[in-house]
Length: 279
Image (cartoon, rainbow, N blue to C red):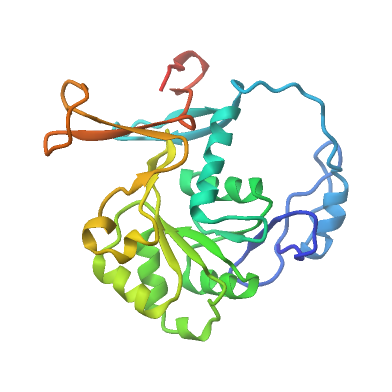
């Protein structure tokens, strides 16, 4: 399904075939026939944007994401409404504005994919959701929708670079490529900078904090040392340098490690309501 740019709904989705695909549908009771992309506006009109008038507190849970962390046992990370809004400052660093077009090419159950979409919508930007991270699908979406911003893992950057037909796509609208999951190798970065004219931004964080720090596009031009670092704190993030055993603040040195603290951190974890605890 792809909405027209003039549509009041700012979300589109790109499929591998480039055509329409069914979208959720139904009447007020949640039942009804499926609609194709041509009837999306008809389906949307059934759900007028009326404020339900439900009182919501900043401390109410607004998002729940699952993470295995380093334990291997999935647990829920709960975020309050205030924590979710605190992530909106990431849009300023990424450069997302009302006239931006963000391509979400990572799964929405992943903190990076979901947060890019939420930050883009909060800024009033158009958002395109890719059904898969296949090179042809992503390149076609960037060209067709004039994508300005996207986020991927470095492994996907390599597949896009090595795709045999990359040069036939018009990627001139692409302004910023964000990546996370692992550092980018200097060779891969150099190859991208030589071939494409866009900025790179690494997003460093975890499910419990969403984004925390980021090396800027300028840092990516300053040599391997800065590229392999975690960058600078994002808006709303405070970084402490602590001893890895005692947790006490220590001067900068090889025996210290840093940890982020931000207003966007989750408010609790657990497998269910009875296992909830503070992050």
